[in-house]
Each structure stands twice: as C-alpha cells, then as structure tokens.
Length: 102
Ligand SMILES: [Zn+2]
Ligand SMILES: [Zn+2]
Image 1 (cartoon, rainbow, N blue to C red):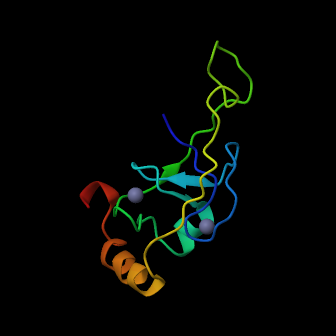
Image 2 (cartoon, rainbow, N blue to C red):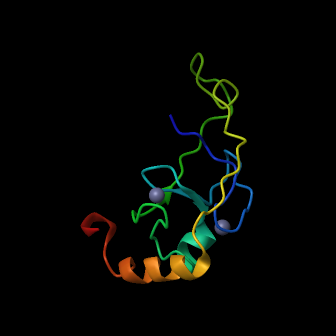
C-alpha cells in the first residue's frame, strides 16, 4: 500500500492525499509535478526511474475499511539526501533515456 508521503522531497511543497500534482516513482519517492518537470526531467534522483501521477485514495468509505480515514497518509516528511550539483549531473546522464530503457 502506498504511504502517501506528505511533501515534495525537493522543494518541500505539501502534497496531501488529494493533491493532483503529486508524482511518484516505483519506490514511492515523491515529488511535485513542477519539480519533476523543471528540475528532475522525469528522472527520480534516488533510483533513476521515471514518475507517474500518484493515485488519490478516496476520502469516503465506499467499501468497508478502505478510505483515507482507515489508511491515513504518512506524516513523515522526506527530504532529498543528494546535493543539488550531484543531482543535476545524475539527471543529465539519464534524462535523454526513456524510463523503460534505463
Ligand atoms: Zn517540488
Ligand atoms: Zn525513485
């Protein structure tokens, strides 16, 4: 199950469970759409994979036991562990390669 992390790892923007601009990689590294486009060029700085929009967990319990009230979003903020110069080099080496070929 997705953790639904609360913020963009790069710019620290809040990304609540209903945010439509949250993007995740296959490991659930979480960034905002602006950072994915303008800084990361669809390259996850932690794993080198690409991003997809994060699905929205329903607010209403339409089936028993499954909604954001039953499985709440994570509150543990995550921050990038790479310095920005190193990150830029990493992205540069991968941005021309499609995620399915990385
Ligand atoms: Zn961001
Ligand atoms: Zn990743």
